[in-house]
Length: 83
Image (cartoon, rainbow, N blue to C red; front, side, top):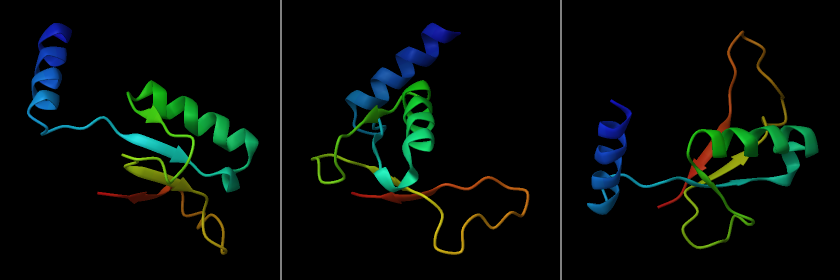
């Protein structure tokens, strides 16, 4: 089953129907949160970008806005997608 999934993923990538996310985790997330976020990006199959201005960056991860965590029981991540 895993081989079939990997095959499908490779074919979709070749056809440019699926792109591997290139993610920049903004330093304003803080050192501990940034390290955890970067670990999650890699674990989920994404690649890390050193700068938001790097060519091909698809997502930039920022912390919560000035009001902070809405604390409604959900976990949020504010992500900007670039095309």
